[in-house]
Length: 178
Picture 1: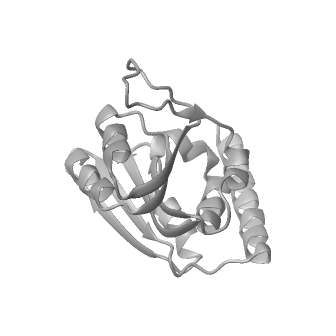
Picture 2: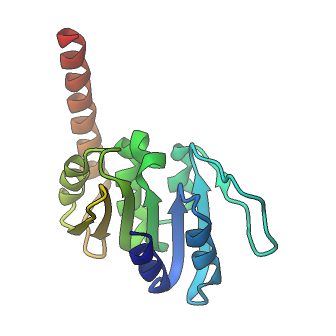
């Protein structure tokens, strides 16, 4: 999977937003790609566990609510996310990536970390093209083409309300069954 991610990163052009990436090879591939004009690396829960080098620019920790404010509408070309760092915030992050991303969103990680079918279903609402690559060791790369995504404020609000009530219903059923 890591080899395929390095291929994906080598094809990036323009502005790149990353979330939750702590792998040194992936970070250096992003920083050394000359076709990337600007990149923004953020973490929500994870921290980098290796020493800073000369070329390494430290990633910032940020609250998920400020991501939409930091990125303007259709400003980012590519987004690369590690699923374990942002899985708790998908109720807002999915709408935000549709808002500020104009080319593709990539998720990668362990398939047991999050129900990928739910993530695919939530993105399909916006008429996007989705490709998933599963690996035998339980890892995956999810590619979402958001170039033709259609959204507006009312649609996003409607989906957030639906997601809230489905989440509330799931919590109630879990509580009653336990």
